[in-house]
Structure formats: C-alpha cells, structure tokens
Length: 136
Image (cartoon, rainbow, N blue to C red):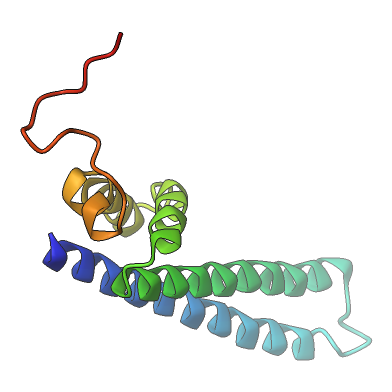
C-alpha cells in the first residue's frame, strides 16, 4: 500500500504543477489581451470581459494547482489532514475528465481501505481477523 500512497502523492504534485502552469499561462494571455485592448480606439466592453475571464480562470487553475501540490506533499509525509484534504479534492477531480476522473477514482481506492487508514494512524474499519463489525 505504501507504493500506492507514494504514487498518489506524486500524481497530485504533478497534476497540481500542471494547474499552476495553466494558471500562469492564462495570466500571460490576460496581460497580452489587456495590452491589445488598451488602445482607446479599439477598447470595448467585450474585450475587458475577456481579460477578466482569463484572470478569473487562471486564478482558479493556479489556486487549485497549489491545493493539489499541498495535498500531494502531505500524502508523501503521511499527514492525516492531507488524507482528508485529498479525499475532498478527489470529489472535484472527478469532474476533470479524463485524467482528473482517473486520479479521483484512484484516490478513493487508495485512501479508503484499511491499509491506508493504518498508514495514516487511523483505526481500521474491520477487525484484524477480517470479520465485519456486527451492528446491534
């Protein structure tokens, strides 16, 4: 299970780096669009809307990328808070088809089993003998 947790951590770091780079690329694109629309003759409301769209989407990509990097580094350190944070991010990742969906599914598979719970210092859901807990 340690291998899966390490792979999951590095995949989050890499996916986060792509998010940060995408955010930076959109920031450069926003700066270029802003300079193109800076001419008073060609200035229009739609041009400014495009610039703000680039800024907002780039900021979202950058912040989400940073969150993924933080979660990945926390998984590599076996932080229990990072496990919970990664599970929250996995829900959002399911919407990012195709890689995010695969990463979210892998995160659920890797983090929601008893071996991973033990690795992060949490008690297993089932006893050591493998029998299911009886509910009364």
